[in-house]
Image (cartoon, rainbow, N blue to C red; front, side, top):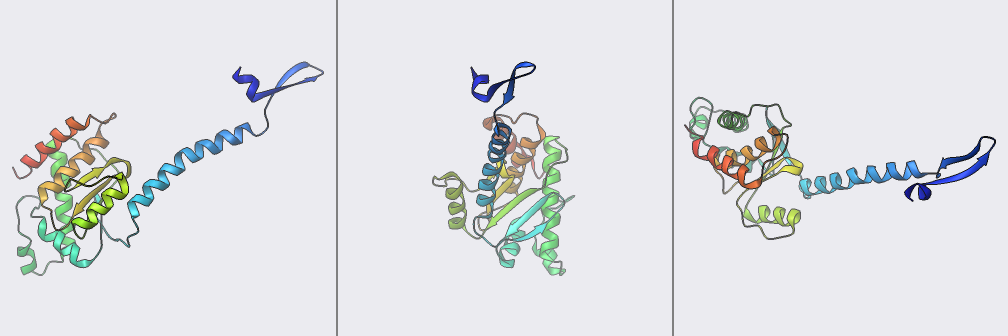
Length: 210
């Protein structure tokens, strides 16, 4: 009997009584605490990956990058803005616009365009975007998380709500594709099958500039 393992008996004036085994509540509480803390700590460790990230926070995202040069390269690689979907970043440079400010506008415009295409407008936690300097850094991050070689150019990870990108191999469609995964996974009560989510994400990529 499970009860017999967790309880002991004693005799008193009222007869036989069952008394909880000393410390059982503390043991259960500690076990539950570890159940949530350990995975969270593991995810946090994978998220930081030993890097000194610099951050830019937008309305919908938190962009993490290694250097100002990477931030400028990211801005040049994304040619998109609200109202006029395809825009070269050189136009804003000619007018002296701050690259970080322009990037923030582009990223939020893409996020909201993806929400529009999917018709999934719902408040959600800001998506983290990890921007790696090159493919070697991106592959190292993938291996650290999944313990297997990286064979993809970018990905979204639900468990820490993070997009992983290589700044030297990036365009607005790739970012929109990964944002779609984030929006889909957080919009529905039950996450859809991977194949279904991938079909929707590809649909977003194909219709981003319409």
